[in-house]
Length: 548
Image 1 (cartoon, rainbow, N blue to C red):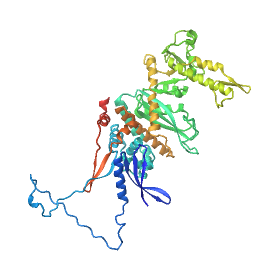
Image 2: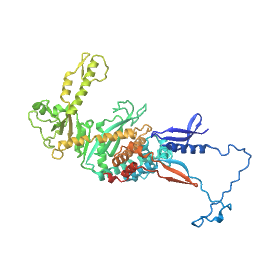
Image 3: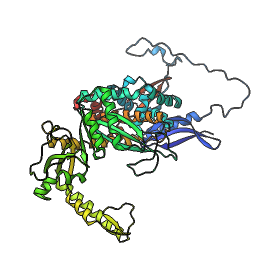
Image 4: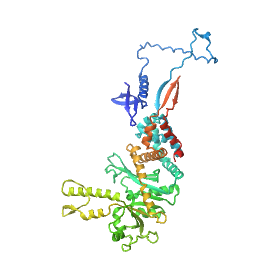
């Protein structure tokens, strides 16, 4: 027997469905929509009850076919006059009647239309695949599985494609080069808005709840400290966090080996010869920096604090451990830590890096912050307390810091702790950009823009739920990442236009429900009433130049 089911959605709305039990399992027969107010819920429930009613259940089946009822035709409209003709009054002439309007459903059609406008404005319509566009918009509004995406699109006022069509779209995504088309559109948008002379790069890992590895999903170093099979994802964005390129690698791939393929693919796709790439200290390897330099690229990467004693040997010799808040030291660092050329500690002045004169070194910029020093000291104190607790047997640790083992007994490594205390407050940056091209302050400021790519990763992991938990094959995973990449670009653009986080934007626009009303047998959709504050948000999205 079918019954009316109410269920709360992720957005806080109440979905109304008609369900039935088949072989002991619940099956959804129809999804009628989602209500955001009590009035909308009442309309949807009344519509559901009407669908469940059986018009002939109270009549005996006599084998007779019911004769159709007659219906009076609507009379032609009379000639308009100032007063009605009194001669027609009381003569049994009936005036034509029109049935009362009936609300048969509501939807967040306005939200869909707004996101579709941004999608087209970014040039993504070049893909020429409406199902792909719907999958991208559904990923932004309410990330879910392919099976449940139809419900989200129905709530957005769209007629969703079948599950098989959606899965065929994933197959077309790889076969027809959708990612290349989207990446080209993203590049064109970034160029028209500003420039791509400086790009930011970072990597993350996405794990799978799978027992066995395959060619792509492998166990490797996890940023979430998991032991499940995973993939490594590299993301390249512009200085504002707008995505430009994405790459997927095997789960056991080292982070340092991902940056060069991504950058080379980006260069070849757009014919770029000169650009600056900014990455964190995880990308710092001699081979990486050499390959980037040989490719004619300029880079700014974070340096490890353990390199400070070598890079700042002259400073420590002439000035000791004394630093002033905000002090910047521009020097050189060996290209190869084992045998590179460093500055001369017997010369008080720091050398000015020159690519010809210092062929075995890179330029290194070090900055001291009193606030960072206080934070580093606090961290070291906590690590020292933990090490002492481990030595005393009060805590168990697999890899404790500042503990040395001698003849089976543990003791505090005072020398290592003292070296760490000496370097608190220091942060280093390695680059191949000469001082005459970019001063030290700009090098530091460019590196600090890395929070934009980190924010994009947070958006993709939380708001867009990038983890491809429902996909298994490489093509499906790559297609899923293409959808996430496109959704991230659309989300960043909507956020840039309005100044609102994408989740906040959806919370504001999704309750603006369009009503589908049946009037005299004809269905019409009417837009919602838009408050002034929501109208300002819509204007910002539809007129991006007004905000910028």
